[in-house]
Amino acid sequence: MALSLEEKKTVVAEVSEVAASAHSAIAAEYIGMTVESMTNLRSKARDSSVYLRVVKNSLARRALEGTDFECMSDSLVGPLLLAFSQDDPGAAARVVSDYSKEDNKLVVKIVSINGKLLGAGEINRLAQMPTKDQAISMLMSVMKAPIEKFVRTLAEPHGKLVRTIAAVRDQKQAG
Image 1: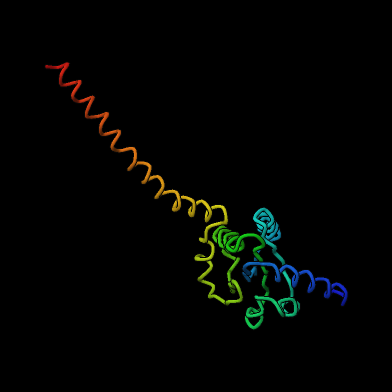
Image 2: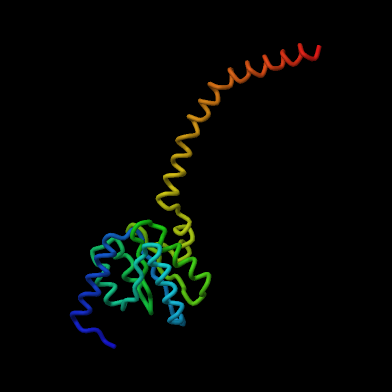
């Protein structure tokens, strides 16, 4: 069913608005996927705060104009679905990468982050990026390590004194 001009303008405006605030974008070919499979993918995308949309390439090109993902425009060929990460740069890559392992009919074609076009093989690297909470946790563990070592160093002389006194006591009781 063909879209009217107003519907096309609405789709372009919606995708453009999402692309303007997105951290990364993935374009994947979905030829041969069943409706059930596509519905399952959309559900996983919603759970991960990923905007997923099947858009005609001509409308997608217009929507991506003036955004960081304009570099994708020349590569939009064939039936593609677009996935935009809203909160976490690696979210769309994780959703598409994980689902493409379940359903081999979903094939990654384009990966883009911060206005840079990456090869389709880079999706795994992007998917392995830590989430915001994981990154904060890693940073906090690195910041906490020197303090823990300092506290252990301060406590060690007292511990050594207590162990020495206990050894002298044990020696006197035995002898």
